[in-house]
Structures are given as C-alpha cells and as structure tokens.
Length: 328
Image 1 (tube, one colour):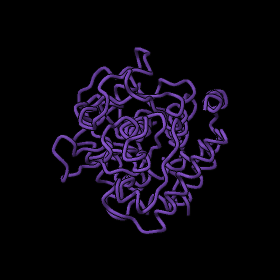
Image 2 (cartoon, rainbow, N blue to C red):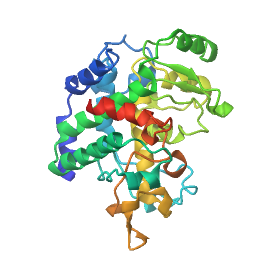
Image 3 (cartoon, one colour):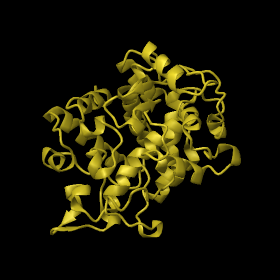
C-alpha cells in the first residue's frame, strides 16, 4: 500500500472522462461534466490543482485522491460507538487503506435493516471485490475511476437529478444569507421529517449547516489538513456554513461526502462492539485487531455513523438505484 499511496500522489491527473461520462450518460444529463462558472467562494480557491477545473467530476476525483492518501481518526461521539477516545489509540483510515468486506445476504442481515434484492447484493459484492483486487494490484488509476463512479452515482441519487428545480431556488432564497446566490447544480432541500436542527440540506451530498451536528468531523478534518489561513472554516455559524456547503464548485461538499464514508469505516475499525462492525471482523467469537479488519459502506446509521441513505437501503429501493448506476 505504500507504493500505491506514492503512485496516487505522483500521478494524480484529471482524466475524469471515463467515469463522469458513464454516469452522466446513465442519467441522460451532464451534471458531472458541465463546466461551472468561476467560483466567487473562498472555500473553492484553496487548491491549486483545481484552479482551472470547473466541473463536479474533477472536484470529486480530486478529493477522492486526497482522502485516499490522507488518513483520519474519528473522535466525534466516539464513546457512543465504543471507540477509543484518544486519537493515538485509534487505527487511522483512508478511503483505500483497508480491504472492503464481502457483501452477502447473511452479512447485510447484521449491518442494515432493509434487505435489498439478490441482484443488488451481487452488485454491491462486485464493487467490494473490485476494490480489493485493484488495491492488491496497486492500480491507482482504476481505483480512482471505481470510486469516482461510486461517488458520482451517489451525487446523482442524493441531489443532482433535482438540484435546479424551482423548490431548490425558493429554499435558497428563504434560508441562505442575503448576499448568497444559489449556483447551478447546488440543491437546497428541506426535510420536514428530520429534527428541526437538521431539516435543511445542501449541495452534492446534502449536508445540514449545523456545526453541532454530523458535519463537525468534516469541518475539523478540513481545517486540520488545509491550514492556510484563507482556507480555514473558522466561522461555524449557519450562514457561513451555507456558503461553504453551497459553493459554486462544491469543493467542501465533495470533501465532506468522501469523508463521511471514511468516518463510517473508522467506527468499524475501532469499535469494541461487535454490532458496530462487519461480522467477518470476528474470529472465535472475538473481534480482530483494528489493523486486520475489513470495512463496508453498507451499514445502518445508528451502528456505524453512516450519512447516506442509499448505502443502507433506507427506502428499500435506493441501494438498488445506486448499484444499478454503477453497473448498468
């Protein structure tokens, strides 16, 4: 894996055409390949590699690469998930640092509550198998494409199909700061079924601008890795966070989307509770050491801090939609 990380750092390029074209074509749209306006938001001006890159596809690929090589720990509400509460005591995790666990009907019965159909299970397991094979082969380019397609499909299932509807514009005018103008492709959604503090959801991966909620680990990680004074998210009040999550190029929203998957992985690696990790991480009735465990994106939110409904089949059909996009 050291060789893989070195290759990822040295050979990163914006050759996004493969995965973004496939995903856009699947949805008969161009949301990932559409060239966006030059961003006026400071949060979108922190990465020199992205200065001339103005598509969501390029943004996604960049932060997939960043979080493949940057390893994180997860301290936010770690005690709830029976994890070590000191950073030094946790196994660090990046997007590619650990193998993915196999996905079967038996394993899903232990990790999610809504069982998908057999074809969806087969496709989810295919994704895990391909990740592991490419990781073993240290094929950095294909791993980027695989995860790029994953997060591209996820962005469509979360927001891109309905981002520019009139309802989105109306909500932006109602809740955003007065000087904010909603960029194209940035969805505003109000979920009345959520607790009041998390009803407003913004952007590619639908985040709530509430630092006291589940965005805290993303904000803290961003501030840790991008310490340039102008890039720091110091103002953690609602209006400032709306600007951060609702920016033109969606840099922070994309970063947080990838980081959310890593947070779920971190719980599975570091928990001392069997229920919060994949059943394969048990041996002779005991949990394996953190470094020997596998991880899976398919976990019920209350057990592994999963942000994304499609990954846990929350509607009983959205995991199928996601996997069908990946392997149609």
